Image 1 (cartoon, one colour):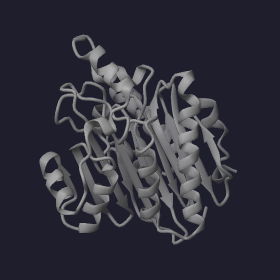
Image 2: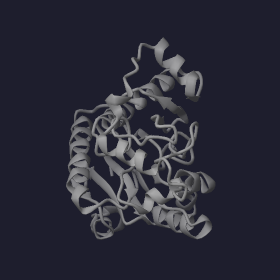
Image 3: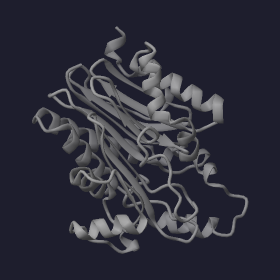
Image 4: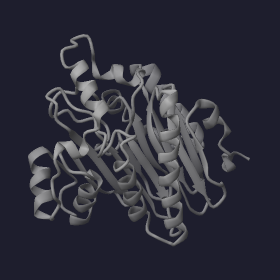
Length: 311
């Protein structure tokens, strides 16, 4: 494989009536990303622009459409990284339409790797980012969900991954120069405690990338993904001799067996691609110089991807 892009739209139990919205959102992002690849854009620029598009799509749990926490606020996490161990990430960020842009600014600033909460806000203001009103991010269904769950003491955030809901967005890009970039963005989980940080902004958990190997983006119940460092674990299996597809499958199997975790991973590199998930559905799309645009959401779709490196 010379170049390509893979995208996920979250590993959840996506209801039938929202399948088309998820597939359309992934398709739009894939078309944008691959067109930029063909135009010889850099991997990191492509990854950022793809995630911005998905953050602006209320179908997904990132940017516009993010879940509300236990206090009725929106707190978002995002990360962007390249294969030279350069990283920018934000966590518990309030009321910015595109947290991935702030993560990119941290990446470019080349100082801190991660900023959270008030510190992330101060940084964003210094670099000219404008806060928006919570209403600009709030989708009506999330207000209804918040009001329903507000006094439901039996609900725990992990339950959301078994319900009809939405997910984190992520992408891995291999450009024509052979560079790999990964980017992930999320609004977290419904009714999460204020200040809660999931896997997304953590290098090794929500995302990971190594030069001349693979980039990985994860999605799912963050607490469990952190416990097993799910993205780095994909590389562990790859380093043991598994191909990219097998590496994702082994990592998800380990997640299931070790902590009964729920989630999915996507991976991409010169030696191929892979994706795996143990939730009912995960929206995804892939296109490379060897594989025409392929979009799916079910396990049977995952199995039908033409993994050219396996032939």
